[in-house]
Length: 322
View (tube, rainbow, N blue to C red):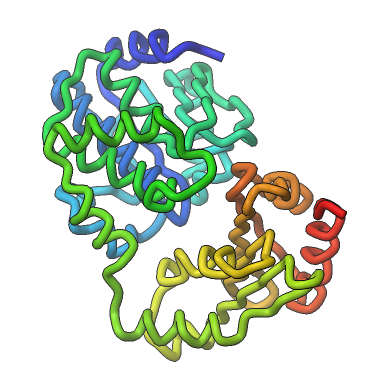
């Protein structure tokens, strides 16, 4: 693996760059990518940020988010992947990335997931509460001083992936990085409100309905929420409206593992997993081809819901302390 100093030197030598974010983007991948995009702009290096789908509305309060493209327009010499543990996480942009890699473009992987496969020529992977902490350190090594907008991008990622600084992997480094962003003008209160608190009446209705039907198992140590396509249609919402539902059950005693199963289409479910720390949900997700962090991971399931539920239940049961 490369050092951040080596990565900084590589990026400063680029003539142009495309910055890839992962499918179903969250604040960490978007914030990190946009911060890097702005830093390269300050260094007079043309770049653009791409994502395969729609950007969740709650992040559009940040200047520039609406400019994220579905596909690259630059024939850049550098391809940078932010917060993506493997190429598959790029979704529909995976073939674009792989084609560029085959052509010899400079590929850079900046991530914080323990499941990262080191798929680029240059890789920096360090487990932290958010990947934006890694990006912040990288930009400092590149000689870029954060302005208010750049700091706001970074702080959005830090707040999002740390659960507003509440997750078990938050440490002093997290707060020091966040403090630097606040010193540069980022508004903690405004970002927290936009990312975690602000919601529509429709989203509040969906949340209440899903939480009212939580399913408890394994002596109440496992809690599973199900969000169906019918429910999303009922409230007129998109898939990104389900973000945060998984965190509720983790506050319930004696729940050790909380899972939100979102129906993507008939027979396919996206699972978000959270743990209080006694169960490694990265291992659980890994059983089904997913991954992420020890405390927060994700994967996809295929099949009828009750069959999917049984497979998930067994995988969690195998890892619960007796």
